[in-house]
Length: 413
Image 1: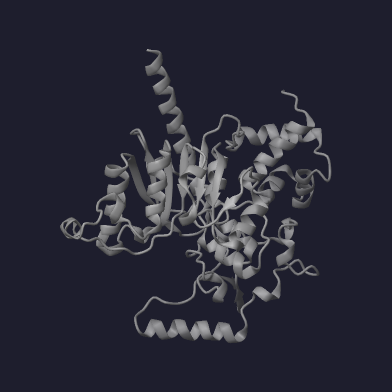
Image 2 (image 1 turned 120 degrees about the vertical axis):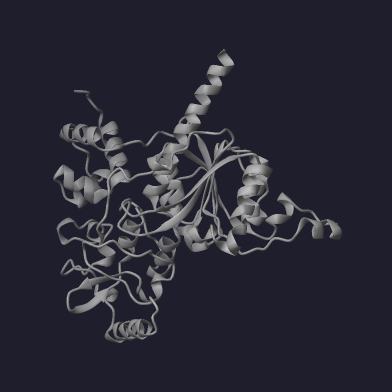
């Protein structure tokens, strides 16, 4: 059996926790979450006797986090709290540039991601020359509505058309402009699934035309449901692009460890970790009463749902049992939590806590939440599902490596 130094033992443990979460690693190791957290923080030395168990886990679980040395690099645009960054880093890439304008998101981002670069703000004010060269451009860009005008009309007015005009006034223009100027080997874009149908499909046709015809990239897109990666129906469109054509296969984007029941991410008194304590009643270990719906709010939601049922509409709350998959978590969850309410039998249901929302989006328990509940709900509701991005990012890196090997072979020949 291979011997490991205390430093490598600690590194292997950190890798597993980052990938699979403190609770799951603690469960398999037969330890408490608090003990594992103390090992991770090095408050307690990681015992050498842990290595046989780690050897076993490494043989059964995916552990594909690479070191940043000689890694592919990426720029993180519209970074939010860094969900796309986590997925790319788990695939072995290194972040060299970050842009995010929301001060609360930046606070969470900085609390969780070590960077040798600062987080820059509004992308409209960023000069492309200030962005380091990178292999992959990543952006969960907001899509603002826009319409197309005929080229003949633009010509008659003496205005630009094509790439320079079709996306003018939208944030996609900024992304396309940076792709044109930095020419990354690949890119990963994420958006709501309605991007495909917006403006009768014209919006997406413009985006596709810009990326393929104007910028010359081979692109592959698909609406991916996060169900299975996490216990949540969450459909988002992912657009992957490469300078060179690749044999992209969306069927490879599958969860390595399926998570299908909301009960798998809820607080459990048997495995309480320090990351959960702010959301629990210290005396009972139960979820704090502040997350339970008041009589007034619960009555309102039931009446609202009944009203719309009579009208033939589908509006209403989403009440789930532990074995269910949830609706989509949204940024408005802080208002009343109605889309995902946890059943408490005959008692008033409760909202998810911010930590449970983090888990529902695939963030590990080591992810810090330094903001208010309201901001946390907004941030996780706006984020990506980390394991989905990890699966896609892994395929991106694999194809870049194949392209690099092919180019090296051709050059040698």
